[in-house]
Amino acid sequence: MTTTPADQHRTPGAKARQAPVKEPPSLLYMVKRLELAVRAGLEDLVRPAGITALQYTALTVLDRHDGLSAAQLARDSFVTAQSMADMVRALEGRGLIRRERNPANRRELLIHLTDAGRDLLADLAEPVRRLEERMLGDLTPRQVEQFRQALSDAWHALS
Image (cartoon, rainbow, N blue to C red; front, side, top):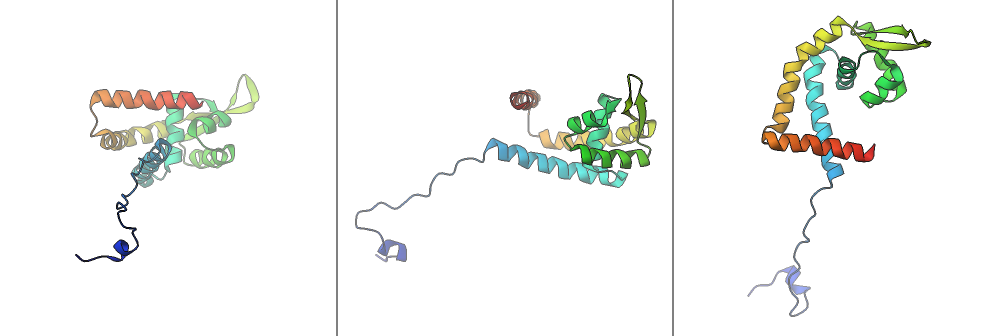
């Protein structure tokens, strides 16, 4: 019987050590990994249109809730107020949004999606839908609904 260097250091009768069973990655890690993959895919889709994934997100927020303040748009788009100020200038410069005084509070500007912004979102709708389909491709419709509900429940638990 031949011995290996590892065998020479074992005490007689000692059992070979088994590799520890690795725990699956944490859910927080898996959520972040998914977020990064989605963001990379989204960046690839929107880059030819001259916008970033974060700008796309802000435009979709306005598509659902037009006429937000910059502070609310920043919160709903997951960026800082400073980042949103830069983003608003860029999107306004492209003609994708416009700012108007809030009639109820003349000091506040409300941000609105323009027709050009709506057209851009319409142009991107199909490629974005395909990206989401790719992400969910191995799930049944029931699993997709459960996934959606689980994500919503997890978000509410932390909000």
